[in-house]
Length: 526
Ligand SMILES: Cc1cc2nc3c(=O)[nH]c(=O)nc-3n(C[C@H](O)[C@H](O)[C@H](O)COP(=O)(O)OP(=O)(O)OC[C@H]3O[C@@H](n4cnc5c(N)ncnc54)[C@H](O)[C@@H]3O)c2cc1C
Image 1 (cartoon, protein in one colour):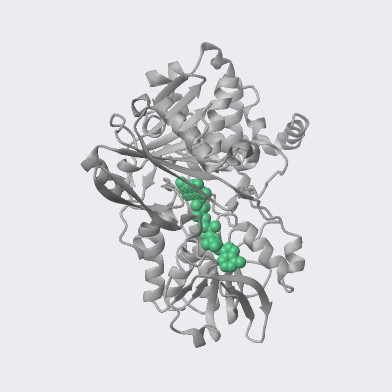
Image 2 (image 1 turned 45 degrees about the horizontal axis):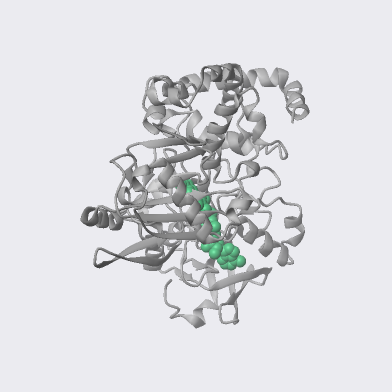
């Protein structure tokens, strides 16, 4: 955080106050600052800005007579093919060079049987076009160990699900269809395929199966994989997200005369003579008031709901809105004295596995790579998105359970455990709900207030970091136009591949004719 060297000025007028220093708020502020709008960014966290991309105290591990320091972060983040605004933001404000993932494994466990299959390259770079490109997996010999002949009975169900995905755009149509669970998508699928693809859903939506709605899953499939083969092209940051993204954004903001203040929890936004008064409580208990014509709300969804409900000028409208719930999750890192054979950077864990995905840190980050080169050790990060009873496990038990899973998947690591950590979030991970007219949009009902974040309404089909960045730029543009300054382009992913586009058009036509009966059927079979 920048030093508070202008304490008198802070209580004065600011052209714009951004509430929240996660990716959305910092992306908005960096764009505003570059145009000379001198934003003030306030964040509740006093030590580590960045929200779900925050850093943390490094891990220091004694190994082979030496202390090794590893930077830490909330979790490894993947940058997907359609993340155009995030990549543009990285290029504009940082020197960070993303690294291409050279493959992702799909590791499935049923009981004692563990099967590894490289899935990323198979899905994105083979010949069968979207939306049928998952058939490319059939050319991968290892899939035959994961599926049985009777799984072909799923074919009609698979076709219906594919048709639903290409012909129904929940975000574009603004239809959240609350209450329809994801299980509807898998009607007619065999249990084996259903369980395997549920793992894909859990990973795309970063949530436990029971927390994923049908429309959220379809939106995730459309953006991340089903409409284009290259949508599933992962890139990784070269170092932890604080070093690669958050700190460079803060540096850019402060270099352009903006301010970033930590330890400031905004408790109210009230109308004032100049426009808005932003009331914040510092960690010391001191109450600060900032005045501005322009506010950007860039908090997580539960934070925004609390803030708007507590502010008399916004409470009535906010009571009519739906704010996505905040979910918990856990991130487990384990260090080993030896390494598994060379392979991919990460992948999904499905079936009976307890964690949901994995990342080999010594193949992704430089500090881990140096340690690996010197000692031969390896380190893995795993994300646990649920269910509740698993997240309720004490850290030591969760770590032990994950370590057992690692040795099931990579038996060579048995007896090689060196060190482990568990990091949890405080229940602010968005339970993604397709934004509709009841969701707070970038342009809010209140003059002079814009909003951004991975839960905020905007016509982008993007999710997660790309939604945060896209809405961040869009919110900055709203303020820039208020200030008479030039806006930035907001980028949209390229259109679906030809076959997916044609099929989608046909299905939409069919829906216009048969739409009501189909929806009735869906609700009846819920
Ligand atoms: C385990 C995990 C893995 C993930 N992996 C990926 C991935 O691979 N790819 C991807 O694209 N996304 C991923 N995500 C999602 C991604 O982290 C988020 O979409 C993104 O970081 C959200 O940024 P944000 O700025 O919208 O919200 P946040 O990061 O939640 O930031 C909100 C900020 O607002 C602050 N705040 C809240 N209330 C107040 C208040 N009253 N006053 C002041 N400040 C306040 C908070 O302190 C916080 O800093 C993952 C998330 C998790 C949890």
